[in-house]
Image (cartoon, rainbow, N blue to C red; front, side, top):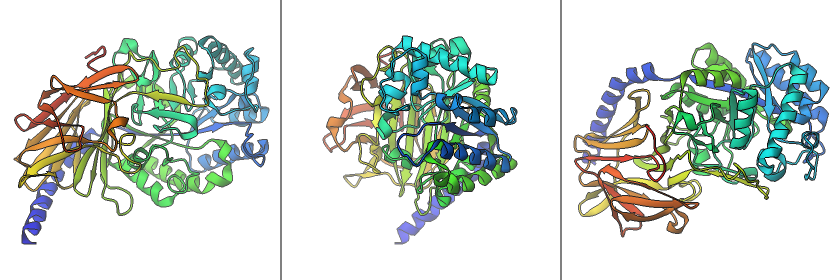
Length: 553
């Protein structure tokens, strides 16, 4: 018992000294925290007869009234059926142009498709399935016709072309065409999820925004010449812990979900961590809701959220912008996709989880701490040369799929709410046991590098994420004979193939790739893990860029 008390005292003293020494650097280097309030508008809702055109209109009216009450501007995105409805035209034209933006919501209803000279294949005037209501269900030539009709009619109504176009999913050909011909400045797509409403987007730039490859709307480009110069923002305000832990659920700022954006405790926690925890580059979230859910369902959640956002804005902790304003700021500040982080130093309720998401144009990674233990739950690599499935082809099912290259996939290779991944292990008394420590401290090293310092009773581990590599360093001999083991729930569900030439070889959807430590060794294991990475000289360093594809610096 006495030994444990000494350990805790030492650990607390070390954590306090690290925190005190680094807190000033954190506050100086934090990027801006940006909030977009985005509400998109449909004039058709065939799924529920009670949701009439008038109910849909009144919902938008109430959203505007609430935003004006708290002096918050935002973005309204019009589906084509709403664009051609005079009530919405009159309502939105009356909004102050310096506070509100009108853009396009890229779901494709019957009036738009037929005006483009294409036969309608849907069951209803708006059919929400991927092969009917989204651009991935149409050929590239058809997409161009649809885009031309929408943009022409938008300009006829408002006198200008929309600057922002968003959708749950959108293809690279459409984004390219909208930029080349109409000079859009921002786009947005769905949060990361698996299968929800028929949409799978998994492994991409987690939150914030990225420049997509000209071949793949979901894949960040590595080179400026290979990117579409339109930043794509990630929608819905994902919970950085729970949304990933079960990628088939919806744990976001959407006010209709009583466990998340419609829950006062969750809302307070989310905005607290968003506004106050360290962020590299910048942090971003998107509030708002489509009118199809109706005002009665979203009222309570929005009435909790809006005053918090207004107060944070007043304090100078967040910027509230339109989607186009954020897109223009992004383009002015970043020539290529930036490195960013989203961190959580204090979780919701009694949970002691802490996390860091790091993104760059080369990869993403997630570090998760719980009960004194660490897991690296996610690593996905990006390769601008891999086209999305719908660059030239169309989906013939009611689903669509966008992926990157998994090295660690905690949710898909683990169990729901129990993401697996790399565990930091050590040998102690002849046994292999997890390394245990205190609370991590998150700091920014420079514009592209973030650090997580994890204090132990003796020394610490430092995890330093750079643009295309990660370095793990043991300082002060925190653990003897330590290593990383990659654990999964089912080996057959992974893309890992074998260890060869000190590399872990993978293959995903026909594309081979690997990770290779430039400091450290890889070896096969017999303890139930996929493989092991051992340090060399108290350090593991490995490149996180697709070494089978074309790389850039």
